[in-house]
Image 1 (cartoon, helix red, strand yellow):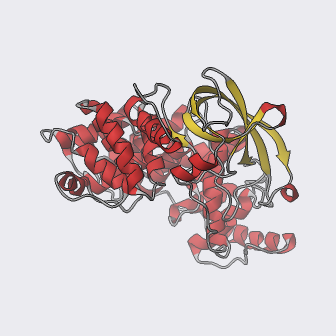
Image 2: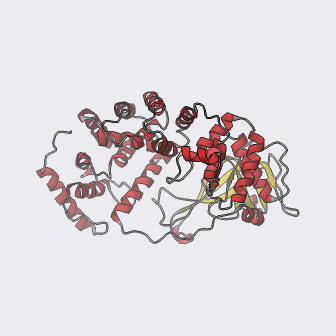
Image 3: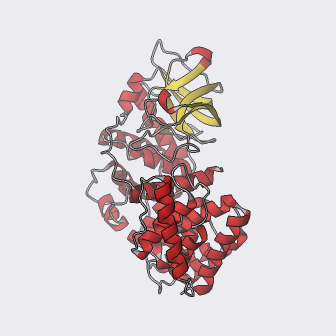
Length: 473
């Protein structure tokens, strides 16, 4: 199963578990790493670029404290620069190390309740790795198994004249490098890290370094502004409020403070248009952040509508995802363009990013006309027979709906006894959906014997036989 499909299965399986099972235990306490703590505990703070990631040995549930399938992972990392206290090992520039870490085995597990937040390493990313001294075989380890503010994003190119005297100074400079010298994705990673900071002193120190090196580079400040705003949690101030803060008050939340200060470096003339264009241009980096930004600040702004319409016509990454969040009524000015883009995506029959495919399916499911809905259901049926990978992705994208239109999807899957995940088959999910959509109790429960489950499914099939499919509306 490909990574994109695994991600889709994870997300929708989580929805299924939330709908069918009792609520899990309260979230466990986690340790969030402060910069001074990481600098104090690490044998060496190593800034490196990930060159390769490979799977290692699979650990059985009884071998881990998580009691779930875990993978031993190995990353090959090239050293760019490092900082170590006197008497501690250092890593020369250009050397390569092997880093051992853990990951959830998503092929055997859909998730872990209150489970770990393991490092998510990708080839090309640059971060500061707080390392423990080398163990046998030259393999290094992080100072903690989980990444709660542990890995500090950075950039391949360091800041000029950066001479850190302490580990904390080194971390401040490296994080500032992500904002000053990094790609847009690096800036966004840096902004997401800022959310972990609980000391405004760290944010103020990092901002001072950014300010000194970014100077009057308005394009850089524009990227810092949009990437930081898009990295905020759902509950966030409007951009207009942060612009006022830039001129006076100082926000108490680190990421809001950084965003307000970055906005303060931008010219006010034509600023709304520039912010909208920049946010939409980078929807592939932060599609959810783009959607929230447009909805909260510019839901019917002419520039937002024009640029998003063009993005839909050109099938740009993130455009359908943003449109699906924005469109909540049938008279929305972008609906026709979004439905057409969704139809074209389905007809291309290419493997799509799960969030984009789900957006296309949701738009047609909720707002598509008769022909569009028929196209969607026809694609599901064809894939069921010829391409199970695509079928799984389409089914996951359409299911778990409150729309009676999706009774037709239940008809397609009600006899499909193949596994959707480790817990449910396609027919099980179809039965649960049908029970929910019709308000008829067929006897389906999250925990029941195979015989009881089959009897309940037979009642669901009998209901479908007694209620022929109406014409799609």
